Image 1 (spheres, rainbow, N blue to C red):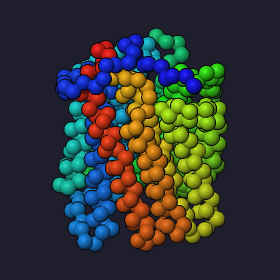
Image 2 (cartoon, rainbow, N blue to C red):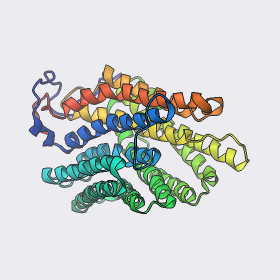
Image 3 (cartoon, rainbow, N blue to C red):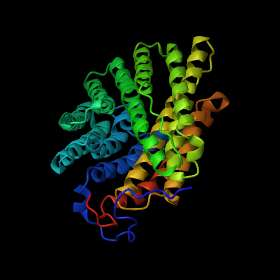
Image 4 (cartoon, rainbow, N blue to C red):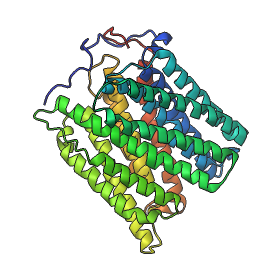
Length: 425
């Protein structure tokens, strides 16, 4: 087994610094965005746990919300949490992928400020009313739009002849902005079709294909840096095929025909499983930080198999479907796990630390896997009825917090401290 390579020329640092230096927060885009992201990982689930407790525990009062809890939770998890990690990652790596101009500090600070203020406005609107939530969501979408325009400028400035690959993540991020905009429209025009479309865009045209696109580029790269005799497998047809599968699922979902997506869902499951094997899932497990990436990606195949099974059950008229199990396998198992794996690696490398998964990262990653399993089983068979389902859903929310609070505290502290190797950034 090879020792994981350092991500910076400074090598191993001299240990964590005790002083917190707020100006350092603005030294690199990932610092600012990731800090808001780790706060949101906890805040969004605390909000949802409070809502769930009011629903399922008779002794506790219900939270007085101006917007029903499920659409509020959907917005936060699809748009208001992971997007900060997306922009922290993409504004860092996009210029490097394209050998183009770096994103200026004033620009990424503006984007982060607008999106953070927007999310705060949305939270406030959940309690005070739809117009307040709309104002917050509008500010959030404006910040997102500035981000898309900035990334487009980086792409245009690139002289690389093979820069078309970057249009995939750029397109998916743009779709996410459109989804958030549709959600803001729903806030002022509460038509169910608008909400359903916004949620479908957020999952099928934004998060899922974006995480797949980033995985296609980064998992073989990271694997090749630590595994000997590694052959990177990145065929040109799989990303377009993935895009076709998710677009088909999106169109059928908003047409209320999601059960007919079984063919595209099964196709995507097979593509994902093939990639897991070709990328060396089993070999990666010898190096925990790398194994976290591969295990996260393997959830995509499992989730799409669950979607396939659910579609078949619905097509055959079977009363017991899988409910929200496939969606949570995607959202928690695939997306949340990948955020932990990718953000841990970026945070370590860009703080000058050794690329080794520590106890906190492994704790969080393991509990996220358990959280996904618990939430999936809350929708399946005898566990999906009555009081047991309620307690499993509450348990999943609590497990999420137990998983993420130590990770957020530990890695959040890195974003306001200088690199241990004294390098810039």
